[in-house]
Length: 155
Image (spheres, rainbow, N blue to C red):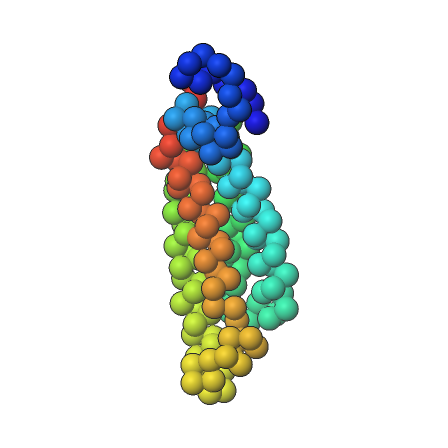
């Protein structure tokens, strides 16, 4: 914890939450979130590649989140270094990533429904079929990019 001057001009330890809120107010957090979006996009795309590879990429849509990983990484990196990119390319790429994550939930639900017993055999098909909630992790990465785009940037 860093020391800061309190209301009576004494040095008090600064709490982590106070520092985080100050970073949001001063614009320091916007660049960090753009960078995290870039890193998160690559990590998520790699994980999705391995999971979809196990399923032999049986549906062409399985390639979409893999392909969007480098797009999110490029937009996040550009947004980290350039304010204009953080307000244009990053929100566009992030919105597409969020939409793809929501689409993934629908496609995974369809995959569960196509298993023997469908949703009547929910517990088994949830474990053995496509992970229903995993695509929402992609939406979190896209959401970080959208949030970065609306935060103010440091001068």
